[in-house]
Image 1: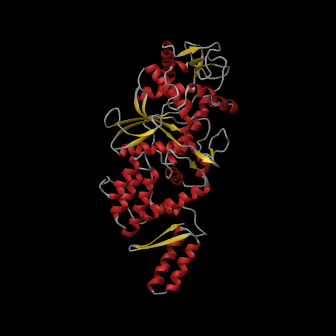
Image 2: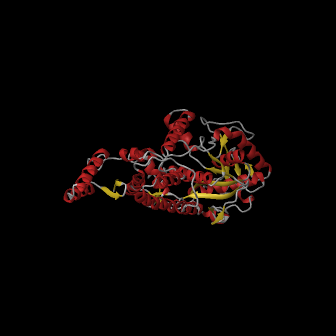
Image 3: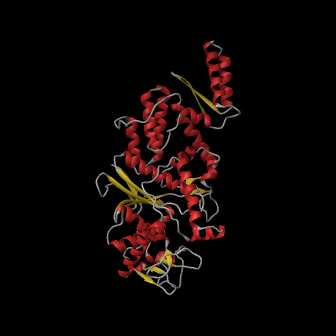
Length: 456
């Protein structure tokens, strides 16, 4: 049985879908006013893997990841650039799609944009107001009355008094309580706006996800995911809005991936310590970036450095080297196979990708000895469930930067010279070539089927 760590219950729980055989998942996506950084890439990769494993486990998955295309930051950036907001968001949606494609991320089943669901937001706000959970203030904004919603704070695990004392609460004199949050913002001059019963304005950030998720997945669905930073206040507020409006449980399993860190600080645009996916892609193959993300458990911090990406590149190269010269495709997996069984156990333990990757290396070591097409096919098939090893091994290895001026063709030529030297029993020459390659960071492995090499 698949077990998922539920952030709300603070424990691993067996995954029991609402409808047998189906899995409904909503993930908070990008606010499109700039290029995606590595923290955004982690969210996309993590939940791409979750979706892949759910499908591999036989579930019929509906995966929704939203796009926030109306927001204070978007409006401000469009004004700074002196361009229409729609032009700004279109440009960065295209950039996001390009980054996601490069990282091997499958398209979600739906990518709703906030601006397409404003009427639904107006409808939900009206219901909340009718139920006494929302109120309009003098400046025209409509706020949610947090203290009127029972159990607010259960996701973050804090009481209302603790939350009120927290640094993240913005005090607004127009609010009845500092914890209250905005559902509808009164329009300012020059800003995009929509007509509403409360005057021209635009939606607050939190209401969009409550509306888009319930519209596309229903009022009660299986999995809601996102970055750890969204747990409070965004996801806390989603619960209050959705359950307050619909009077039923919102989500069964809450999943949150850990931060990407640089020098032990969270990577974020506000701190200015972020690296865009494009910047990292300029230095590293996109599959190396994906592998770097997958090697860490999704709930753990991910420490960014060139050294860690270099390590990921070397490790991924070892896996591709095991497949070198093997022409195989993915195929249905025999889950009775010991490697497949271990892989499944790892993934069913809250998507434990570090352990699953370790199984791939064990299988690659076996493949280096056996050169068995069956082992190669299993390696490629299991790796496909993580979105890895789907390229031609020779093409991947040849695309890597050369070591000490040695490209793949030159390395193969030296390996052939070494083989000829060994056949002639000229072991001194054979050892010299091996050492020369080792000095160039090329490691040779002699197998019954021949010599394979990898960059180390």
